[in-house]
Image (cartoon, rainbow, N blue to C red; front, top):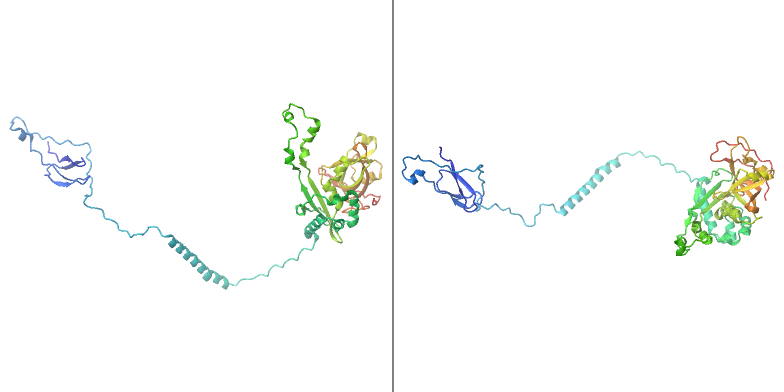
Length: 432
């Protein structure tokens, strides 16, 4: 058996196992782990036989040192006596660039860029010949009323709404003082106690009559229904009624209807016509649309009352009593409050019926229903019936129509596709 090549011993300080050559004499050296100076042990005895004495019958046997399964390689360590070199730094020095250095560099870049632009770009552009084109000729201000009417109309409307006297109102309406005198006889001081409205809240509408002679213009005000929340949240009945323990009486039931807490819609049609004095307001149609006079007349006028209205008129279907009494039926509608639409009747052979024959369609083959603007005089009869007394003129009197002016043609209803060539009325209409 061959002799072992290595032997080992433990470090007295850190107990690490140190391997040395088998024939190494006692030697001092630092521990490879902790650096403590250790001395290797002396060489072992030559043979076991020398220690036991002379035993001739036994052969000398060398017992090998036990080996671990895996022998780790020695880890070199730096002797503790050798300290690592220290890095000497200048006090106050920093590896990051100071902020003022970055700001200075940024400023230098900006100044350099500006100098480059002034030196080269501006100089090159100034030296390059530029072909100048003549400035476009400025168009003269439009003189057509098609472009200037809106501002004029708003000025007239504002002045009209701010007027507080009879003469001030007369300055801005069609017909002047005569119109205001006639309306004041009907309305009294209510002409000067209206709810204020802002002229700038009116929308400018093209009526399609701008090319007429004289042209007609329209400013439209349309405020929807508003709820009076304070009144709506106010309790009107007792807790017993609210819980259903006591029935609600008819009077209180009427008071709590939602429509009693609504502010009605406010719709105004302000039509303007060009006159010798400039644009002027149609006062009649302004009052009719603002105060819903057609609705008031139909709902609450007494029997025998008469009134003149600007309306959209169309022939309606007669009912059995109308046929029995030989009456022709029409429907008149407010120009802006389309829900204010009412049936009116006239005798089948009356002069009014003959003048309205231009829009007749009932009982006629191949003719579609048509509607037209007209100024009519009506009267209230018993049982809420409204009688059509007179067709004053086609279109709105004082605005686009006048007594004696022939019919200019009706417009087919929206669902109709056929049109009818109108026949001019033969009788002449006179001013009522």
